[in-house]
Length: 111
Length: 115
View 1 (cartoon, rainbow over the protein chains, first blue to last red):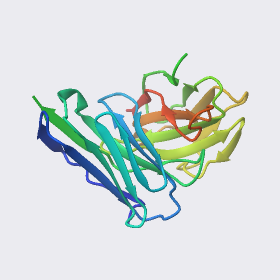
View 2: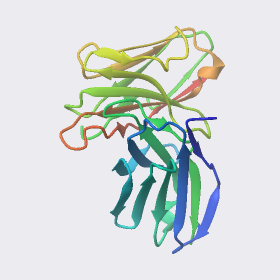
View 3: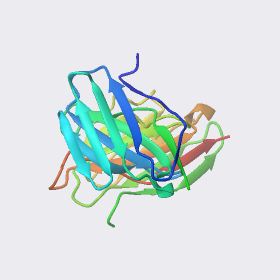
């Protein structure tokens, strides 16, 4: 079993839909949880950062972490064609340590 | 510059050749990471520097891979005797700024193709 599991998709939704992306993990030592967005042939771009359990909202994006279930989610409201990208979840054990990534979920938002 | 930069953006080489990939981190960031991303996969950790020293090199796949960061800023990833399986995108990230110091910021990557 990989440390971080993420459904690779692809996921296709109409413009304006609510998108739900998620990852599960097995290592209870993870304390930092991130979501990165990666456009084709570009480097990952940080979207959301959460420490420990809880919710965090930033504009149309909401990140949730449930450490008891070892489950994290990213919600995108009012999805736009410009949101079409691969979304990577990533986790770290403590500050300034290597991240463990999921495979990434490829999202297409259709106008 | 404002972000992490990597050169070259693309590198094509022949099996058995030596390559060097360069990373310029965000100014002032003390930590620097190298990851490798194969097609359809998430980035996988290779090596991590804190300052000039390699704090963790457990992700390097074998002794053909080596990285340095002699002055605690720019880093070079070196691959000897390249193999076709080394073809991937090599990503560099840095962290350690004032706010959210754990956050890793990535460069655009170097796409390596070994023929």
